[in-house]
Amino acid sequence: FEPVVRRRAARVLSRAEREEISRGVAAGASVRALARQLGRAPSTVSRELTRNGGRSVYRAEPADRAAWARACRPKPCWLAQHPRLRRCVTRHLARRWSPEQIAGWLQQTYPDCRAMQVSHETIYRSLFVQARGVLKRELLGALRRRSTIRRPRIALPIPAGPLADAVSIRARPAEAADRAVPGHWEGDLLTGTIDTQVATLVERQSRYLMLVRVPTKHAPDVARRLATQVQTLPAALKRSLTWDRGRELAAHRAFTLATDVQVYFCDPHSPWQRGSNENTNGLLRQYLPRGTDLSRYSQAQLNRIARELNQRPRKTLGFHTPADTLAAIVASTA
Image 1 (cartoon, helix red, strand yellow):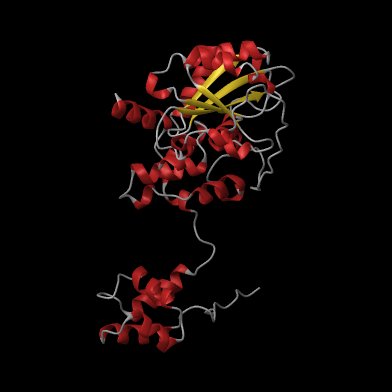
Image 2: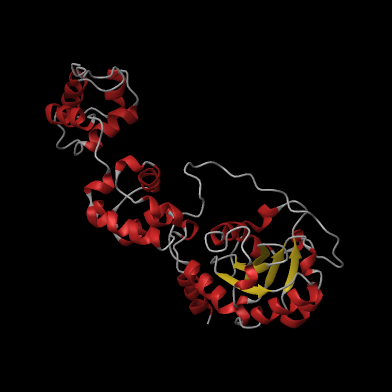
């Protein structure tokens, strides 16, 4: 078969339109005036000038040749063209960083090096489309979600339970709601197989995670183990704890008495009120998948998992890590 003859799409700028832009720029016409003259959006003209060096160097013929070359398909994969970037992405995927965390970290670490920048969508495509031959299929196992396509997840409602003397989240101080002050925590139980669970505590401002080994859901035992963990914190980081409506913290008064940390309970079926904790629990499923016997994990092993997560960059922190963020907060309040 003969190859299809390349044709310019009607929606893109033509060579004649680029000549009009070049003459208009030389005459000092504004972007909006050029757009009206061509019947195009101002953003179209603005992008055309920006991608070709700006008003001072824009020329129609080189710009048209560059556009024609950019339109060639298929394009070589960005990761295939940059071996150093590919090795960096592979190394961090093996450390269980998400593609978005890797992309954000690269922007922070190499802000002036275009060859060390990549979008998280490119990483996902290179993993899911194995025909590209860039990233090995084995790295799919390092992703938090095991599916080979991306789709939204629907959170299941959390059942409510009666709790004596429970203080509603609506009574929580405003400083906790707006994350203005450190020391406000969100907590939950991450469940495994039947009657195996781990308590998760996430500091709202820094997203710093602590894991607590909890052999049973017996309320006094849960309160005692949480109190032991919280008592290791400096006073500036002990202000409040927000929990769901689970009966496992029915002994919250004993916890408050031992730590001087007030417990606030979410509204029924409102896991979004502990958004930082819910998100962190999702990250933890990479290490503690559903159906895992969590009783096998010692406190030392849980500490190692928490340390690894606290050293991963987070988008909500500007791709800084929770560990560095909390250290900076503690240093500023010391």
